[in-house]
Amino acid sequence: MMQTSGIQRAERLAIVKFRVWLLHAASLAIFVVPFTWGLAAAAIIGFFIRVFAWEGGSHRYFSHRAFSTSRAFQLVLALLAAAGAQRGPIWWAAHHREHHRHSDQPGDPHSPVQRGFWYAHVGWVLDQDKLDTDLDGAKDLARFPELVWVNKYHYLFPYLLLVGIFLLGQYTAVFGRTGLGISAVVWVFFLSTLLSLHATFVVNTLTHARKPGWINQRRFDTPDTTTNSWLLAIPTMGASWHNNHHRYMNSARAGFYWWEVDLTYCVLRLLAVVGIIWDLHPVPPKVLHEGKLGLAEAALERTSQNNYGKQR
View 1: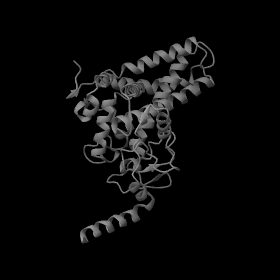
View 2: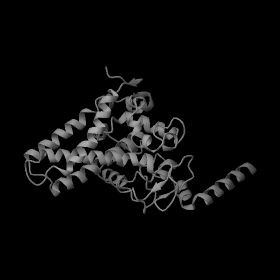
View 3: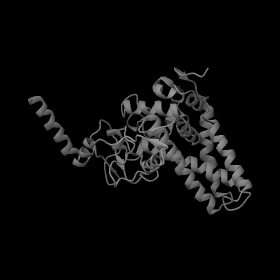
């Protein structure tokens, strides 16, 4: 019987470290393997599919339940996210919910304020204490045996994807010609996966603990150091509107306003149009109004409302 509560043990830390360093080292082979523009295009497409898998799947759906979908498509999202080498959906959601409970405070799994830049960027996924999955940290997900199974055997799916990409490159001309199996693995698997991982990691670091400036702005007065970054909006598919997200995390969109590019939300809207997902949670009008006021004016308005409430 599949475990549905308690701690689900992970593989050994040495294995995880080997995978991470292999991913970085193998990506350097782009400079020596045969190249085609088809490989570059496929790597870019693969990158954005992986980013959507973690931002639209692991983050907005599994962590925050920002929309609804069928059990079948829920499994598709879990498989896509696992194939992107970001461990299992329950592991991802449990750690991310912990991050929101303790954002930039003791207990935050990956705060640069608490543990420094490199630990928050990549060190935390190489920490033995962070590898196991607390199934009780995401009970709503652990009640699905198929999600628990994907979470336990998450490491199988990147390997299956690697083999599939090799066969596609070796025996078809989809990347420009046949015989490109090794090149396809390097470009479409290793490099694409590596870049998508770091797209995730920069949200943990570059949108936390940075002073607001022309790249990072702070729209909401949240009890942490989160900022919004327009520069990272496209490569993170909207995840870099992080201060917005920490102000209201249950919305299906992180770019709260039309000028804040949120590619994940665009894909979610398309999926909703064709009926694959539904019930996309909007940003409350009160939050949108607060965001347009600016920090000082919003704080003044809250103070006035609190004083009015006390007088009554």
